[in-house]
Image 1: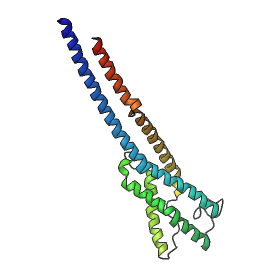
Image 2 (image 1 turned 30 degrees about the vertical axis):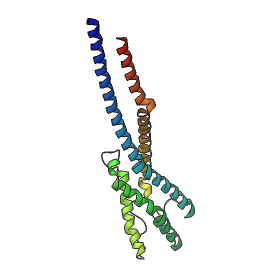
Image 3 (image 1 turned 60 degrees about the horizontal axis):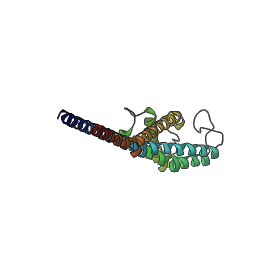
Image 4 (image 1 turned 60 degrees about the vertical axis):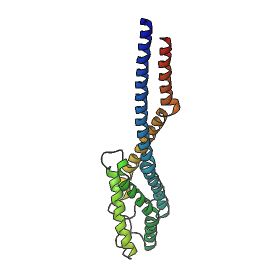
Length: 209
């Protein structure tokens, strides 16, 4: 009789423990899945596109410099000779048709997806990118009206580009690492395998009792 009661008590205890472990495992899995969903959104909706836009802009800048006064890295500051009319027209075309669309897209992403930022506050390099884009909107409108008196924005891209490149690359790599770790912890070979193992162990203990 005592053996039967003891066996029953052990079985009930193991069942309760198994339920608790499974419940804990389920909650942990749900948290990881929610975290993975956010990381996926941060990569696909913000940091991935921003890094792509920046990388393409960087390549485009080098392409422009190879065509417009090769070897010269600036055109309006530092005592450089002024651009000729044809060079100025070429400069305007690159800004309007090459850099302008990407910068607008980046600005809109930062405005619309700021809730996906890793940071508590918006980084200064992102604000500088948006500010320069906004300033060029005024310059573009002046050009449309035939006013070419203003050629360059107050902020040069090169002034904040290194900080921006470092921030975007580090943030993207950090999120990719988090994504890979979360994918492993929520895969059948990871988290679910652990749950199955726990349930099997508990069942084995019950049979031994």
